[in-house]
Image 1: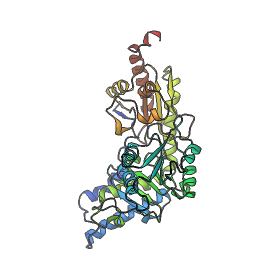
Image 2: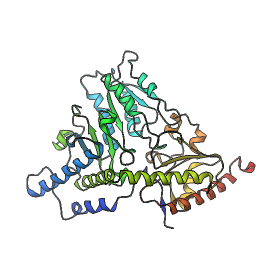
Image 3: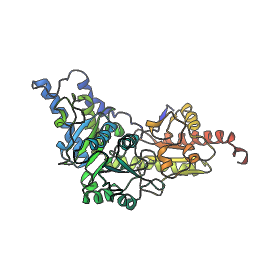
Image 4: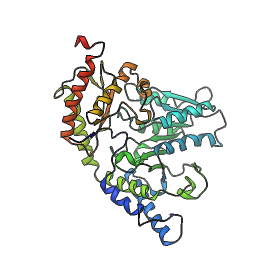
Length: 394
């Protein structure tokens, strides 16, 4: 069997139909969308068509979509906008967020904290933030009113769904802005900006078989976000710089396909995830395999599991050598042997975090690949447990 990719939460392979739509814009079709001649206007039409498709995926209006290069850029833009707002005096602002946001939110909040902002981090319990705790944190503290709430829709490691709708409704009633990092959710579960009631939402095309280098920031009408990159009038002066037409076209087609095939994709992904989790105890028969968040609402494609007596990085390497690509956590923190900050924030011990593996399936995976993976997983876990301190007791 060829190498099997089971790390779709890090990035997904480009859909051939998306690649086909992009190819003309990497060759014979070209033009700056800001140019007035026919070449430029052809590029402009392609960008606007993609904007319509991205908006449709979210149930939004096209003018509310801002194209950018990554989810990180979009999250940073909204958070750092707080530091420039005239209605938020220096040192008077406060951010309410969860304890296991993506690093693009977590590190941006840390920087704002160093500049005088207060940051309240609500700890997720076993993988899900408690909505009432989050809402309680919205009340003024130490004389500082909350100015923004940042809460992801789906956690990138555990796959658990967060109570964004309940928190956003309470925040908006208090006049507090809400940022939702939905990068891991869009394209996998239905996402409606009207239902969520947030003010800003972020998606990334490469998480649902679109290209790398293309993302979108949705802004509610009336959300006054000044240009976070300045120098030109692109994106209604909210993000200067010549648009990456091929990538934006790809994002649009990926969004169109995700909307059209939503039910089929959900069924396929959930069936593979469930096959993995059944196999852990049945086909593979791995003792002491603990699936995290299985009792919570979560993405249909994500299994996060711990194997006692096994070091996750070592297991990842052995599986990679056997031809199976998985993850020990967020791709943005790979290469480190420190326990995941998100898992620690969720209340898991360092030992549990370091013994965990994330398996995230995609539309290209098959049942045969999952069965082969389970056999390899059982073999490699057993081999590593021989060398663990508890190995002799097994």
